[in-house]
Image 1 (cartoon, rainbow, N blue to C red):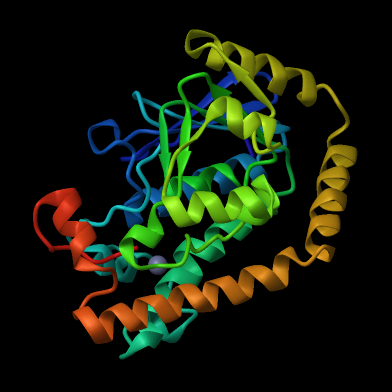
Image 2 (image 1 turned 45 degrees about the vertical axis):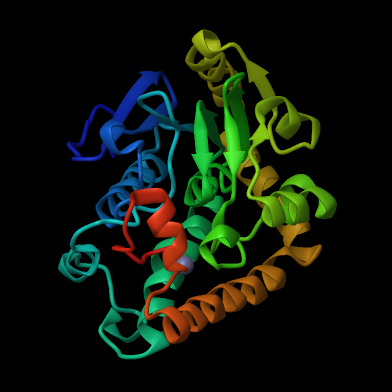
Length: 289
Ligand code: ZN
């Protein structure tokens, strides 16, 4: 594929800032880069373009605006409509089935499925992160191979406040260790960039105004290496992590996550605890988590 192609997206910007480097930028600044279904599909398409482009060796995932991502778009007006209109859907009952199956189908494909897919893209990926990264935002950062954070970056999983036991891509124990994983889940507190680096979740913390230059310089250095060896080294580390139990633990936690949605649906008539929506948005409209 020709590396000069610059596809047009609504919610993503696709850039080629240097030879062998692609930069994918979240671009819903007014919504703090909340992950609408459109954004997730476009992000997946952008990753595919970079992965399939033989002139790209390293992929940066960045975000415009003061915050990297506020998580899943809990108030997207026609999420299911966007999903149903997309031409690559429906591997789980077309998403139109009834009961708990429909929600599980959507989340298995759009949340867990996409994050796992991006984790396993056969090229090095680098997250370039500033500002707040909340809940579903972690599911964009964690699948990347390296994480570079600005000194103002903060990371939070607040899903327990929503009556849900952690985000769908439940990588916390492998990112920050079991003690901190429990604390961040139990309290919904933010992890600072410095703390995340100390725990091994972040590779480097740099000044906010150095973030893009630092990340690009690192990407260019990696892009000089032979790509096949890079691919296999990435696979080797991922396989090692999966053999530590990550893959099966992820399936279990995803099932618990779905159980929470079903519980909330039975008790509250919606997928998350309505008190969270009331506190966050001033009413209880919206339900996707
Ligand atoms: Zn969910």
